[in-house]
Image (cartoon, rainbow over all chains, first blue to last red; front, side, top):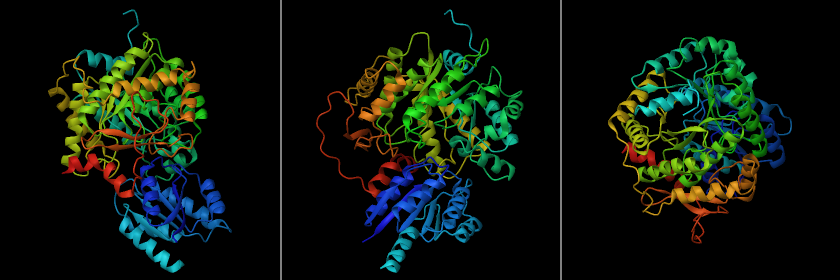
Length: 137
Length: 420
């Protein structure tokens, strides 16, 4: 049923509770989860996409560098011929100021994220998962 | 005492303590040098006995100096001070006239490979920093533990040799934090003492041992008592040390009132339990990186609260309730020390064998066979002890699988208690 999800922290983010939470959240919804942990450099992320062929990649960041790190990570993934089509989403607390920033969200979407869940919007994430599941079925 | 006077960080805290003052310290770091300078000045001027903090940004923390430089060049916001991007000379200028005998400054960083950071902070004229081979490796990096041990051994030696005639370099263990929440106090105390021992094996003579406020004040009192007792038993007699309490490091209350109540409880805990220094949290903690004004308000609230608190009478045994923090910590420390005379080797072996094992830690060198919970008294307890050599541990029923809702409930336990 659910499929395989690769969960990963961003390159400069050392936090892990967000990753553990998302891991459990996805498992409870029937997904098989591979959790890369914190401080994941872009090349490890790409390599893991290549090896695991996940149905979805979830980046989570709460250290305030999420916009910058996420932008670089998604550009790197979208440049790889063999993994560029994998769906990738990002969520957490993405800026240093705690403010919603539609401009930054738009830039992340334009750079290739399939969805952005700033301020850890789990309801929107669950809706996305349901839609994604329906579309894949 | 035959030791020369120490006009550095450790000496300052010892003097404050001898006068009955709790030293209060912010977590503070900004990308801009001008703002960092103002932050230090305001910390120094705050009402209370304060020391300064330069917290580094997380690019510098992971060794991505190019990204830190790019952020400085492009005026992108950073979540801390990019020490290597600004460099020692500019940092020395920033500190000139702020850092002095009455206001020592500590660099806080979070790196498992801190040699470059240590070299730069020493070159900038700072002699106090923090971290540890375990506490800045397992929760915060992908670096293998054995490598982190090697990096930290070199870094300790670099710092130890950097003092002046009357400044003793100071290093604080971050071992009392370990993921910030849900790590039972016995293991936190043990890791702090073990890292302190590691520092002394690599030449440091002025250290501090940390403990982060957890879910129960009574248990935290026991933990600090255990930390003091075990440090006195285990550390070499020529080492000067003090204890530092971190105001709650987990999910912080989201209301200003809740955040202030939690900080006040940390400040009175520090005084009651006899900690020498407190690192504060602000009312902004749950939302974003705090401003200078929010930091100053937190420092002043903590100092004011501390001034009204009194240390508890010594001697009252606090373990009647069966918490046994001291017994747990002592068993862990002794089990690790028996593995090898070199603490770094012993620490790596202990994690490989599961004699030390941090609950919910995703690092590949952590076995991940332990789990913890918050019991109905609000105390942190083990739900599975894995291979930990704990005294008198009865065989435990297999822990129920942690759900995302259960995890969130545990993670928000303190936040909810103080926000309500």
